Length: 99
Image (tube, rainbow, N blue to C red; front, side, top):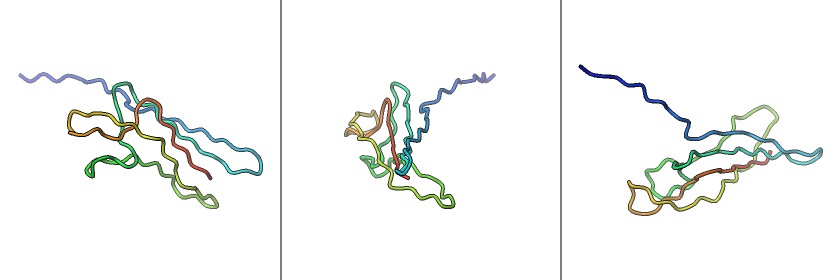
């Protein structure tokens, strides 16, 4: 007889968006990623070619244009599956984009 167990899934990353603007200036969009302790997500430019980069993008909208996304500085962290340290984001990562 096979027993099935329900495994509770915890969100590894919680995100939120903040808009900052003053009249007559550009709008800054900030996306924060709160990464669960003990976890990491790959940097925008990962260390190894087979790793999937973290990418922030916005859907096109009429009369709205977006600037280049500014990615946070990644940190080096050792992972069990890789010989070298990897560039990752941990803890709180803030991505910003002018509009």
